[in-house]
Image (cartoon, rainbow, N blue to C red; front, side):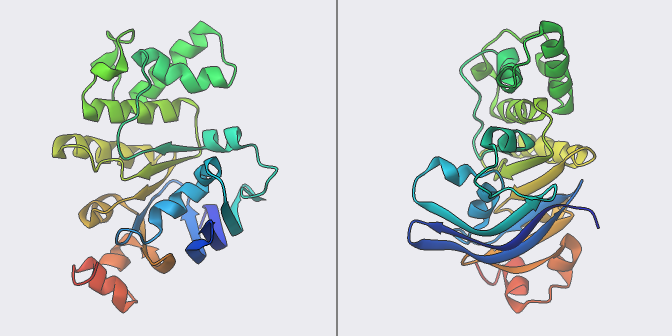
Length: 251
């Protein structure tokens, strides 16, 4: 099995408080892996370890390893700008920048010193097409992104992530603030994106995890309870806690 990310004995501390406890997990390439579990179980903490978002705040500490391309990405020598380009993140609420639709998508490309306007146009169009947004905005590229609907804004954010050609896309409850129709569009998009990218998604919605995921991990109190293909987790779990959680008797 082709693993893109391998988590080995990962622990994480917010100051003196331990939020993750010796997690071991392998993320498969070109698949959707969902992280589920009750609030406060550590799933978002784990997700943010993958692109080192915790480094933005003081007194946080990692133990263990996350291996990507035969390198521990928790090593202090890792270039965080490059890392976050390789592991893009889509948050719970859409976060368009206060600028035009075009400039939103081109933002990361310009950070990577791409200045040629023809190249920028090509990459912006490609990303918007990948995010299934091009036909809706192709005549409005100079308009402020704030004018888009919530669902369109979230697809814009996904396009902005895609423009820098990441290896992995991290979704932190990316549909929880959207209406059912917009949620369906994002889910369909995620299913399409896994052909070219690896996706890791935190979700509170177990039905969503069952619909879109190839693999599912249940977390509880900072520990990995069970990890398997999604069909096994939802129909033949090995752990009693997993069975109780997915059937609604716990959590």
